[in-house]
Amino acid sequence: MINLILLGLPGAGKGTASERIVDKYHLTHISTGDMFREAMANKTKVGLEAKSYIDKGNLVPDEVTAKLVEERLSQPDIKEGYILDGFPRTTVQAELLEGITKRLKKPLTNVIALEVDEETLIKRLSARYMCKNCGATYNKISKQPKVEGTCDRCGGHEFYQREDDKPEVVKNRLEVNEKMNAPLKDFYQKKGLLTVINGKQTPEKVFEDIDAVLSNNQ
Ligand code: AMP
Image (cartoon, rainbow, N blue to C red; front, side, top):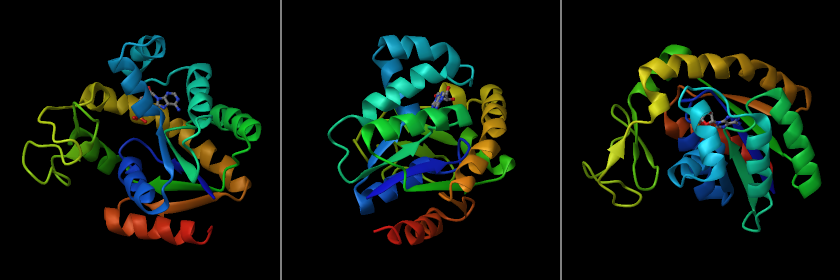
């Protein structure tokens, strides 16, 4: 069983790495950012509550986020394990997650941190865009759809830039996240769960390094 957290600042490559991990290990990918974006698109109560924080690049309050994660982790589709992407982001959330995994009897097995310098993150985020229909992520520099203007995953033709990937928000978002990132790594280092991987490598090499860690677990 693999129950994994992927840590890394926005743009570190958590989404791309997750896709590859899911393909090989059949884990359930749980991204709090994706869940919030879906909730905002559907104008649910959680979505409306989260929007004002997300649009400014700030964090949604812990109690809202932790409840969303607990509900998702309780679903029966998580059989072969999970990847948490974008949660926890703070040590308070890491402590809340300990309670959740204990209650649900789904303990963490690994924490993998993707490290990328800030200059590269800003470049990546400003070039990133998404499919309006399914949320698949592309990048003007490094990851265009195979057929121009058509989403590889769903065939959609409409794309957009995330409000919080726009330059005026990105800086605050990185600052907010950076402050939290180091203590979080310490937290999991102390528990003996952490592996740090260089996220500036090619997606193939990043996955190779992750795979080397995860294949030891099986
Ligand atoms: P992401 O796609 O992971 O960059 O998340 C987009 C936005 O959703 C973040 O900038 C936060 O506003 C919100 N969000 C996602 N995950 C969390 C979390 N664990 N705690 C608080 N806010 C979150």
